[in-house]
Amino acid sequence: MTINSSAWHTLFINVNLATMTDGANSYGAIENGALAISGSKIAWLGAETSLPPYDEKSVRVIDGNGKWLTPGLVDCHTHIVYGGNRANEFEMRLLGKSYQEIANAGGGIVSTVSATRKASESELLASALPRLTALHQQGVTSIEIKSGYGLDTENEIKMLKVAGQLAEKLPVTIKRTFLGAHALPVEYKDNPDEYVDLVCDEMIPIIAEGKLADAVDVFCESIGFSLVQTERVFAAAQKHHLPIKVHAEQLSNLGATALAAKYNALSSDHIEFLDETGIKAMKDADMTAVLLPGAFYFLRETQLPPMELLRKYQVPMAIATDANPGSSPIHNIQLMLNMACTFFRLTPAEALAGVTCYGAKAIGLANKGQLALGFDADIALWNIEQPAELCYQFGINPLSELFVAGNKAI
Image (cartoon, rainbow, N blue to C red; front, side):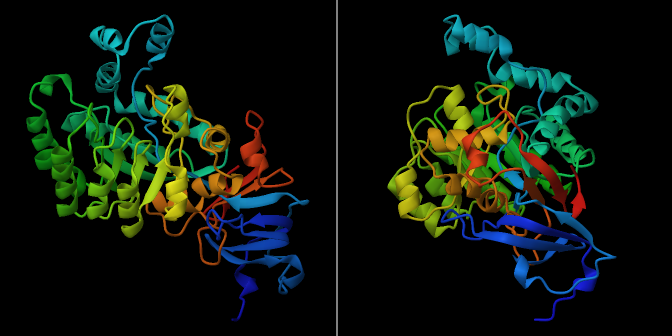
């Protein structure tokens, strides 16, 4: 293969590469390596001793001084666009109030829906931007943002528009997911099927026509939507050529993951109660399991996801923040890496794969999440001595430089 080094504009030398091309099996490490960028793509990588000739006058050379390069990180499950916050409920729970007592006082998701409906687009954008900025400054270059706090056509569209506007504020690839079937709004509390009609017959067609979402999600659970209702939403999404995802098996095992597999879903998320049948279905459908240790921690859950079965069937495991106001008000991707290892017993290589190659897979980003020829040059340079440090500690940001689509972002 002829290497056109004349097209290179940036070259990292004296670096170690965690390519993440081996998935969860290892870091795909190339020590004492180099990596070249041409345009927005990775044009060459390998051992520095194999570096082909290049024009030193036209290439920006970055001496990594023995630091590590990884793909830009991917946060594949978030809810960062919303109004208000629920700190008061956090305090109420710690003072002994029950979930029902909080709900009766107007708390829970109802309070977030109310605040989100009242907020303007500019207000939602202003509140979401610091959340995205925090993640971006930790090396996140791609993120999924869900709707689901509007629960009517106007406000679901408003949330999705704001998610799109965030991409104009920061150099982050944003995938938008429509989660109208997140909870029942109060005006439909006695008519759940009628609300599902609204989601399927009005919201999804409008959102698809306006290209406002990249996927459709459903919270299928005893406190959410039934299997029958969930399948109606899946069928509507499929009709409008929108990929699906599912919040499933978080509190019980209803079989939503197996149902989602029939629709070739991108992922099933949470999955603490997922059984072997569901895992087999995921494997057959090439789905990704998205683990959310922040919600597990914040809700003080005790049921661990079935990691050994996921490993047995070689189902890819992604990791995400699930950043949201109620069950995971956490905007720290390195904390998620640490929690994935400490709570879920993932290896550091598995955890890092969860926010790179498998995080990208979970949201359909086939050209991101790996350091490989032709992949997008979303690249993080870390001041660390070994990749496991990214999972080992948090609170000190080791990010040295960040490139997005070949351009320096941080």
